Image (cartoon, rainbow, N blue to C red; front, side):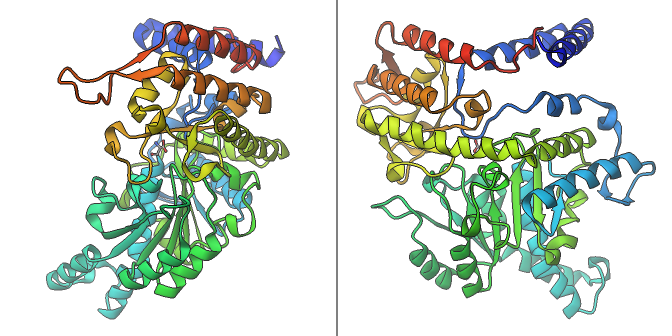
Length: 479
Ligand code: DSN
């Protein structure tokens, strides 16, 4: 065991011992989570494994400080160390992504998107209204002015990718605040190719005239041309907001460059830090100088006090992502996704868009007679962790679905390469071929229950265990 692994093992063992003496169930769940993560093929496209330095950075007293406000301009005294932490995180983010401005406070992707939306409303609607009315702040408005401004906020339009085409809830879906605070129209993908149809999107945008055009996705297995998105936004006077939560690691790792890199084209970009970027659970907003001041109003506009310990861990993760090794990792994530897609296609599995050129693959399991939920459960029984996902125009709706989304960021972190991912494709296909739907008691096609042929789960778990043992998670960490 290396000195580092042995020191970390000792630190975590002792820390868990202390936690155990206060609340044993939490120590037990923490140990169990490590065992579970070590023992399964983690293919959830939005998950990863943060490094031990990132994880350790989160366990400190930086958590204990209130620091609402911005660097050097807080609502509490004594924030000098949180100022340093936030400043270092923002500096790494600006340098890594080549962004004019970075805001490290958001606690999650949804929070980051809310900061983005409110910063755009503030810049595009509130500031011009105040200027028009000769007011410096909303406090200077009459009740009638304020009422009119609120109505103006509520009548704005947003256009984002539809959920079943791969967009995210926060891109205007009606069960999310974004679909309630804005009038929204979504864009889908071409029914034949499954790809974004930029010409149709332009025509729709000309008709709908959104204030905000959202680009980005959670389950679209292809790259986006942000130069085209910029042209469309400009043609209708929209602000271009890119949600790169899923593919931030591929941008950071220079896999997405030129027109596939959103930073030079977007006004505001939001991301999570824990997916392909491989940092702590949290969010980040990048913006042009023009939008910086309104982004800075995120806390307390829509965010609670910043989490000093998590911003510190973001700084560590972003420093890691600036190392050359991260570019090698990001390229491997994309190469492995291609290997996985090719392996599935070769074995007869249908993929939405016929493949991938990012970090994720979307299986259409309808040809196996399965719903996404049945496939997800059968795979889980077999030690393969995925999530069910809608496919375009999904006949089974958003709960049962017809798709399964799988991604390569986590297992690539463990060291899986082409041979391992081809084997994963073989295991997934074997499970799907050996799963049959079970009809309901009334004889209708069942959407949840299924039968897994005898021996399939055991056979797959044994094969997965071999792959996992050869690519250990946190090697040398013994608790
Ligand atoms: N939970 C994230 C994902 O899985 O894509 C998005 O919210």
